[in-house]
Amino acid sequence: MVQLRSVGAAVNTPFHRRSPRARSILLMIATHAGIEDMFRHAGRDLTTPRPDGFEIPKSLLAEASERYGGVILGPPC
Image 1 (cartoon, one colour):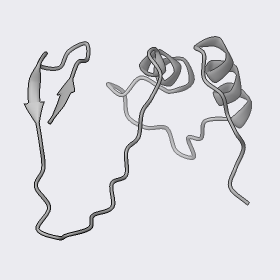
Image 2 (image 1 turned 30 degrees about the vertical axis):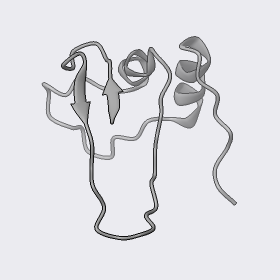
Image 3 (image 1 turned 45 degrees about the vertical axis):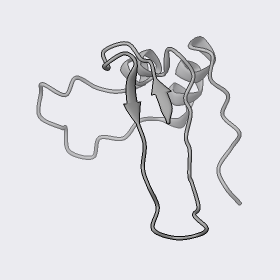
């Protein structure tokens, strides 16, 4: 059982998943605190229609990542 604790999420809510297989593969993704601020910094206002050709410049993502404690390891090869 995993105890999930997050702002805006239910605190101390047990979560479990039983696999019918003898062996299972688990993909776990963890993000640093403040990642939502990084997305707000580099993103756009979702209450407005998406402009034609909208794209987030990589330089803005890099700036936001550095500002909010993220590390960009680069695009996959």
